[in-house]
Amino acid sequence: MNPLCEVLLVIWLLFWIPITAVVRTVSLWLGLVKYKNVDGEVVVITGAGSGIGRLMALEFAKRNAIVALWDINEKENNLVAEEITRNGFKAHAYYCDCSKREDIYRVAKRVTDEVGEVTFLVNNAGIATGKNILDCPDNLIQKTIDINTMAHIWTLKAFLPGMVKRNHGHVVTIASGAGLFGVNRLLDYSASKFAAVGIDESLRIELTVEGKTGVKTTCVCPFYISTGMFEGVQTRFPRLLPIVTPEYAVSRITEAVLTDEPLLVMPRLVYLMYMLKGILPAQLTLAIGQRFGVTQSMDHFVQTRPKQE
Figure 1 (cartoon, rainbow, N blue to C red):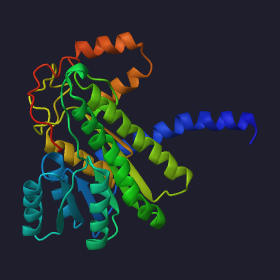
Figure 2: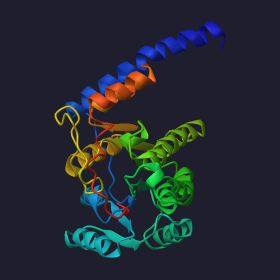
Figure 3: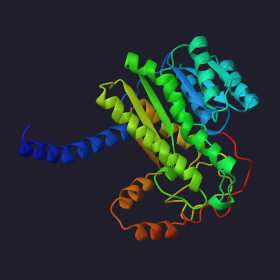
Figure 4: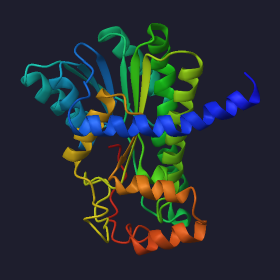
């Protein structure tokens, strides 16, 4: 193709892709987009014992998916599995320390042998220390990276080959708004979530280049979710930038996954902030963050023992 045609094609795409995105959004609001069927799909959810991991397990189970629940808290994880099976759906609970590669590979093999080939992977497990970088112990920084970033890579290595072979599957990355913007007192957490966003984006490109269009990805970047992981965090303008409830988060995540939405940001104002970050000077974006209280949001964070959630 000659250079002139290439330029004209790019100009056309600059108009066409935003138009299709708007049409898709309006169609979602009107309920015109069909949700894909997950009946019989094998879904692995890390950090399924509590928070949005638990709610997502319940949501997928009631849609007749077979859920494999991973968590380091064996008691809570078993309770979620019991709740699902008591309601007549299928669930299998597995103890897994997502900070350990060997544990991930071991449990992944068990799931494949005992439940079946995994077709949906939800990387949800995560921890946050909430400390300034100089106050954060080295072992907690390492654990944050291991769980929030490296576990995504090891689970992909375990389950992606089967998805690619069948050209069927979905990888869900629960990242964070802190993976789009740096946040005070979350340097290690933000670094791990920036990496998670990059993993999702690179994976989507790899799958596209390889022609594996049947394997979808969805990256989720919420503002704080009121699960207890960020106990005490505050927002200056709750109407504009609310702390998201777990129930709302899971309803939006489910909608995004079942309609093959590649990127979900919550609340919607964060989309605008993310766009402005790319065109405004760094000093101005910092000033906006200060005015919205984002840079002070962790000031009243209640320090608890970091846990996978």
